[in-house]
Length: 72
Length: 527
Image (tube, rainbow over all chains, first blue to last red; front, side):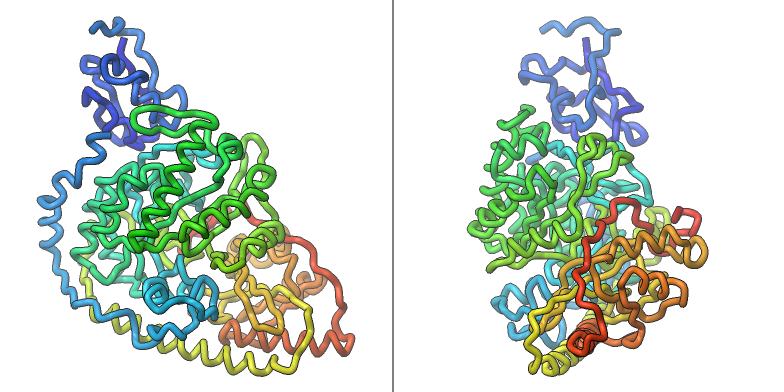
């Protein structure tokens, strides 16, 4: 799995971008996107996914079930 | 966090573009012809000449630190800092409406380059603009590269503009050195509690060093960092104001303890603001029906905390992109689109001569006040009253009742006049003259006042005000506020003695929660 950002919920505040240890987050037209190929769910870096922990709107950074669970 | 701590990436190379602008900057010659002696009226309230000269020098032209200055000088905020590192129950980052005015809300985010250009554009059109603040819409220190990148550019291009920032304090201890290096000499910390039990009801979480903390742990961590940051600022000689949001039933009594704690750690000014909370804002407090304080509840708490510490009462809780005198917002005049196409002529000389003329005006206002005050010398009444004043700046009674977006409130006693707050009201003139609902709203907002001093007022609102027990007074039109207020108060005492006015207690008043319309906004937006 990877995380994804629900576009309609994103305020574009940019808090998540510098927190991502994989530089998987980028901005497009004022809202932010996670590159699922780069996302490791923060496994190996932190105890909790950083985008989820810093996001000001609940249920905005969520698991993208289209992708398999990240394997170290 | 590592990326956040890295100093201004690419700042210098991007800055070289800005240098290409035609900017003539004369060396800063000090701030005006008078008032630097330390004897001038100063401090948070007009006329308290009790500040050391070095502090007075720092605050005298700062509208957010000096009540007297806020009649003459303007500030601007640039919204370069969207990210935040904590969540507050009075904030909802999803909500943004141009007609909405409160912290944390902006219409447009700027890059440091755009922000610096905007500052120069505003400074060249509004000579009163002396202060640049970064207050969000998130937390400036959760976006340090953007915040300090903006300061770096502005300090280079317009060294006469004072820099300040407003933070929740969580990241503050990590940045005090940089704040000092960038000559930011005014910092505001929002401190709503020192007790984690109280804090847990205000802050659902904080994000610190890669971890989200909740409940009392979050509040304890935040409080420790805030007080540590405050102590570090004090040691570094940086002037610090503390903002507190008064939330009835949650921290209202507790703010007396907060006041003591911040005073003992060297805070210069304490600003207790009413909670802004309406269900349509979608905040936790708004949705839960948490009310804000009434005007008299707020004043009573401010009075209680006003011992040796200056209390700020002129805060307008403005947006993170506000432009203009406090109480007005000219942000709509300076859109990014317009600024891109503007020819910017930054004339430091012209700005200095404007400030010189303001200082002459301030001195005249002060002299007039002192002369008028002598006329109260023989009075020994302990009767205090509140007066509402319609003003559009310059320290004068110069606004039409129906055009007033706010009223300034003065408490009168035989010691003279004291600014104790302001009340926002609707522009009731805009949707046609004398709409009854709007007028009723104005009356509710100044219901604790004995009279309202205006430049002009129509017959219909005059009659309604009288019915509500508030005397409309237009005889002091275009005079200085304090002079007019003292003169009115003297005649009030005489009439009271003669039994010509009824000696009744005024009631409480309502602090307005809704939208605040920008100057120049079309009438259709005012609805």
